[in-house]
Length: 262
Image (cartoon, rainbow, N blue to C red):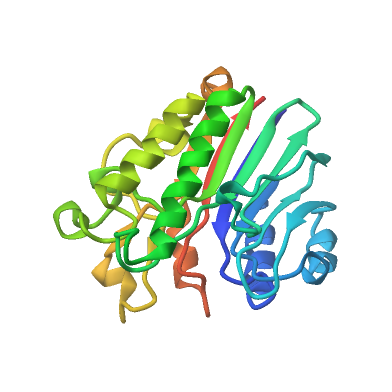
């Protein structure tokens, strides 16, 4: 049965409850994966989402920070989470659909401002997080799996507005791209978005600091949809809903969509 999945760093699910509801009403994905929920699980406004048909949720939360959730119209079983790099953060959750597909929802650490682990502990944590992702995928090779989320890295030159100007900016540095690539290779993951949209500049995030984000268009593709090779061929219809970045009091991320015929 085909299903459409979306991933969105919402930057506070309670603050932007209305925007989530708007997306669920207008786009109606079967599954919505959220990151940076910034809420304890019990305070996620599920009553409103349930009324829109999203009767299933699995989540991990923290007050004010991090947090991941999967909202689904389809039955989904909570199959756990991993605390990569032992940070004690709510940054990963996995759910299994009745068709056997497992969905991993990730919120990789942003990594702070300076791309140097000697002076910036957060950057080291980000690299360690990615290394442990790699090692896990090596040890337990995923099958029939989809990985989505804010991975906080724009890997390709055309995933950023200026490759040259961002080479020393956290999210596009060579060492981050290398670490993300190693994690991707370890799981055999296929970048579904770029499979469907192989050419051209493509962004999912635009900074709040830009007074006119749309005209300046200094974006980065930080949000990703991957799939294991055994089901990647069933994925299609990838798109980034750029206009959501222009909604009232928006997240600085736009949702990324893909459809799977499974």
